[in-house]
Image 1 (cartoon, rainbow, N blue to C red):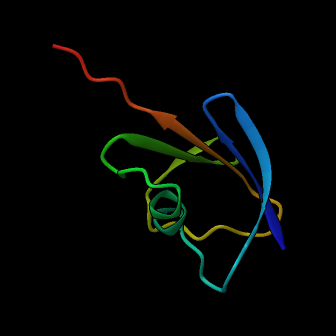
Image 2 (image 1 turned 30 degrees about the vertical axis):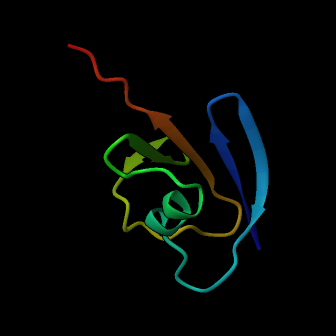
Length: 67
């Protein structure tokens, strides 16, 4: 089972490594903070506890802070 990950300029197919694999686990594996990215699953905004399913497209969008 696999899903497509889109992050910055990278699009890659990744394997789902276990049952009940969440976007939060993906974010942690990538060394990112859930406070600095917004997640989309198949084009819809989702929370980090959302399960990743076979064939999903997950897009992580970096939040830019300014001041």
